Structures are given as structure tokens and as C-alpha cells.
Image 1 (cartoon, each protein chain N blue to C red):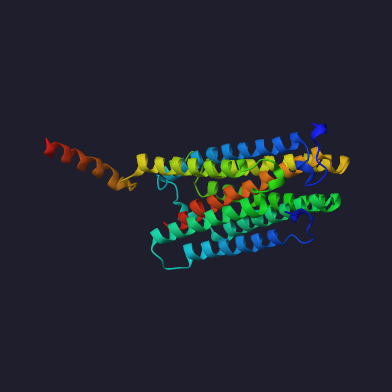
Image 2 (image 1 turned 180 degrees about the vertical axis):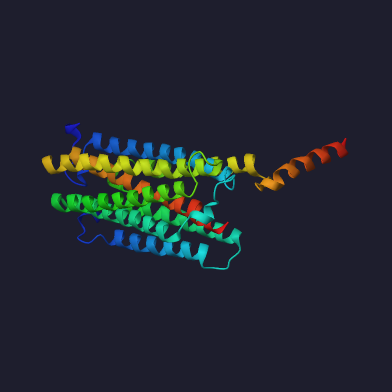
Length: 201
Length: 121
């Protein structure tokens, strides 16, 4: 692999292994789109089937949802800035921006947990109605992805702090950034098709 | 593309501002406007697709030449979204098309169908 090492361009693309790993991650993300699409399809089909549980329009609060959306949106932006710094070779700036990203991600998770607990108190749980099963599965799977992303990014940050930017660590840094932006892409669709439409219909 | 050597991440800032504007526009269209529900749903779903595009093109460097991946990332995302659209639209079509979810209506609906069948034969 080192025989093919390029001398210019972003560090993560300089080795064949780096290029192929990143390409492979795009394939993984395509599979993730399909995974989430099945959850969205289930949600769409079960929409309105709330049985005796409260309707989504009664429980969704636009303030909470907008705060969560902005937290994730800003974290996606700071993650982009982190990669921008990575490509300038600024280790400290990369770590700082990634830590901000992860703190925003934690804030998002905090709001989501608060939201789920609040819904459960109002009688909307995984067991209470088909609609709420689909809702918690969809939003919960996204939340699980955010949780995993925070753990994963933390480990990569430790590696970067120890080893600096090498073709290997910058490849990992780039891949976690793709993952993090992708979480925001999924959230945009949850925000629109679950929360906004849930409040309109 | 000498973008990675730029001092200021202009593209990220433009993408970020656009995302915020689109999010607020979607929230306003859904809750603040008096548009018919069908138009709201079509409108905000379009805004979501645009915003996803911003993430993919402006934040995720999907079309970067140095990646050595050619058109593969773009292809992956495109086909992923096409599959997603087929799965969601197909499920709605087979499971919900022409069927109301109203609990009181549900029983009557089936009965009506039976009546129609009987009168037809």
C-alpha cells in the first residue's frame, strides 16, 4: 500500500487503503439509507394508528424539536469545520471542533431522552399503540446511531491525540465525519416527515 | 480542487446558513402558513431533499476528485435514495392506499366492500 502513496492531496486519500476504506464507507451509508427507509415505511404505514394512546399532534412540541434539529445541524457544521482543519493539518483545532461536535451530539441525546420520558409519562410507549411502536423504533434507531457515533468518535479522537495525523488516523477522522453528517441527513427526514407532518395532519 | 488549502471554509458556512434557513422555512410552512395540507407535505419534503443535498455535496465532499472513487459515492447515495423512495412509496401504496385509519370508519369500510361484492355477483 505504501508503494502507491501519493505526495499531494488530502492525507486520507493518499493510500490505496484509505481510498478504498472511504469508498467502502459510502457503500455502508447506502445500506444505512435502505435500513432507515424500512423504518420510515413502517412508520408511514402505521401513521394514525394510535389506538387509545395520545395522537402525535398532542405530544409533539415544536420548540423541543427545533432545538434538537439545530443542535444536530450545528454539530454537523462544526464536524465539517473539524475536517477542514484536519486537511490543514491542525491537530488541536480538529480535536477542539470535534469535541464541540460531540458535546452538541450529547445535548441532542439529552433532549431526545427527555422527550421519550415525557411521552412515556403521557401514555405513549413502545407498547401502547402501533403508531408509537413505529415512532420509537425509528427515532430510537437514529438516537442509537448518535450514541454509537459519540463513542466511536471519542476513540478516534484519542488516536489522533496520540499519533497525530497519519494516512490512517486522517482516514478514520474523515470516515467518522461522513457518518456524523449522515446522521444529520437522516434527522432532516425524521424532523420533516415525523415531527412536522405529525403536527400538521 | 484546492479547497482543502483554503483558509476559510466558505462552502461550509454557506451550507450551514442555507440549512438553517430551510429548516425554519419548513417549520413555518408546516405550522405558520395556511396552505392546504397536501401542499405543505409536498413542500416540506422537497425542502428536506434540498437540505439532504446540501449535507451530501457541501459537507460530505461527495464529488471530490482526489477520493479516487470516481462517481461511486454519488451513485451509492443516488441508488440508496431511489431504493428508499420505492420502499416507502411501495409500502404506502400496498398497505394504505384507499384505506382510512379512522377507527369508527374501519369496520364500516370493510362492510361496504362486502356489500359491493355481494351486489356485484
